[in-house]
Image (cartoon, rainbow, N blue to C red):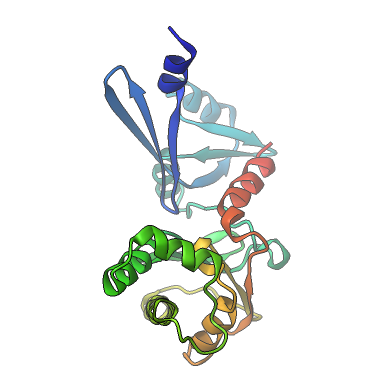
Length: 257
């Protein structure tokens, strides 16, 4: 087998989503997919429990006096022990992992409110980065690739736009942010057993679609114009918006070692 063939068969496509992690591999002429829940749960340690997990080949780790069960089985054990599954947030360390994280990705806008790292609610809205590119491209008769390049290299929210492409981008960005804030308000209204938050919480923006200059300021204005049942201490952009999800996964992995 040549090196090229070896690389082709050993390559893995990885999609780390808010809800699930999906991998794709090539086996001969077929594609094989696997997925796991992107979550974990901690349960009390006992030798009996550890033995059962090993026997059943359930993915787990030992951490101090607890067992961390991760992946698909975490949901089953969370229900069994009447606990919540948890997901890593890499940008809330200074507030004890309490706050709202919003990732403006290419396909979806993913939102999560966490209290001491435990998700209170999470949801996604469509019409994110890729939708903006394709919509502006169709409206202006341009290739979506060119629109994406303009969006990533020179678009900003400050000032007035003489360029029609910039003007269209601003409109679709505005619609995306309005939809996220409206969904956030509706979700707060529908949540039961909301934890009592003794102090204002931060809101952190991440994802490639949040990187346009002026995005944070525009989003904060829309948020401040909307009445929410919790006080927001600050709206900040993650230091490295494209790397926030990976950083959160690393924080969780290191804490389990």
